[in-house]
Amino acid sequence: MLSRAAARANRRLRRAARHLAPSPAVQAAPAAGVHDAPPELRITAIKPYPTPKGFPGRNMLFVKVECETADGGTLHGWGESGLSGRELAVKGAVEHYREFLLGSDAMNIGALWQEMYRSQYFEGGRALTAAISALDIALHDVKGKHLGVPVFQLLGGAHRHHCPSMCTVQGIDSVEETVRAVEERVAEGWQCIRVNHGAEAAWPRGGPDPPGGRLQPGQYEPRISLASAVATLTAVRKAVGDAPVLGTDFHHQYTPAEVASALQKMPPGTLDWLEEGIRDESIEAYEVLRTLTPVPFAIGEEFASKWQFLPFIEKGLTNFARVDICNVGGFTEAMKVAGWCEAHYIDMLPHNPLGPVSTA
Ligand SMILES: [Mg+2]
Image (cartoon, rainbow, N blue to C red; front, side):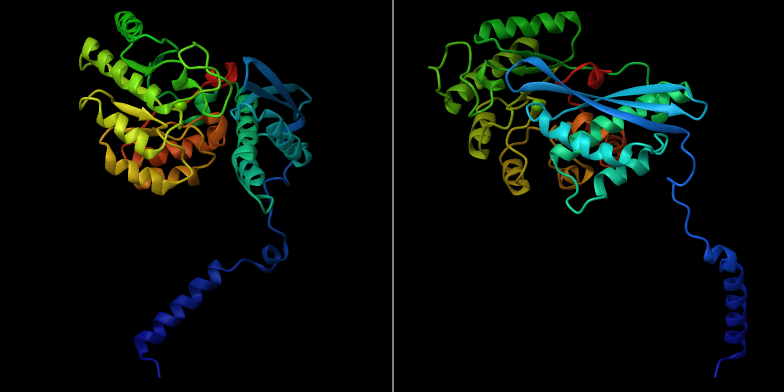
């Protein structure tokens, strides 16, 4: 038996529920999807363009999205994919997506992103997300043109009028010449410099023979390369002092033990960051490496979603988010990663070894 007060409360809840319940007409109508409305900016063509970059293993894939406006006008946008060296796989993925993107409204970028990522059972992965990235960038480009605004206006507007950028000194074999090159960059005003020592530091293990002649063709000796990198980076820091931000990129060629012993041979404070010390498939390996060195890490240029960034951000494994907009899923996903980094006081260090669209 309900008390009088409980019975009154029940009556109030039932009255409130009657107001919340949809009318019979609404209940009978199917839910309207974003694709049901007439497209404001109808996608009419999607064209991938694989483009050689001029040296082995590095190519570009541009994607053009063509649209028709409601009044019959035409616009197009350009995107770029970041999966250099596997651009034909990405081209195939773009062609898959084209099957259902044609006729869609390019204004609904968020919905199209979800459809591309999740509309098949095997979602995500580097090749698919590189294709999504190129399409997402192109969709932002064409939407901005349609609205008459630059893309940054679609992302919250200008936050600053300039941002610090980084230069790279690499491909120089001698310690003295590397030091001289870094000093020249500092004299030019660069305050953030990445020093990749020697040809090997930028050369994929298992790839073509390194140029430069220091090693015999076909040989690759990590310990020789790392010893040379230690000597060079130590000399560079000594020459330029504490003010410039110095980092290096090991291009994930080494084991945790090799990276740890190399970093431990440098005086404390030599490096402000190490980029891609090891490969990123094993979070546990990075956790082990984290215990072996205090040098901040810059990780993420290969990550193909917010979910790949998730453990590296939340476990404190990356100190600079090396997000690549052409790999991570375009502007849509990069902005989500940026928000997550902001919540963890992690700075962005965007990655771009690509072409004019990525750079723009
Ligand atoms: Mg890198």
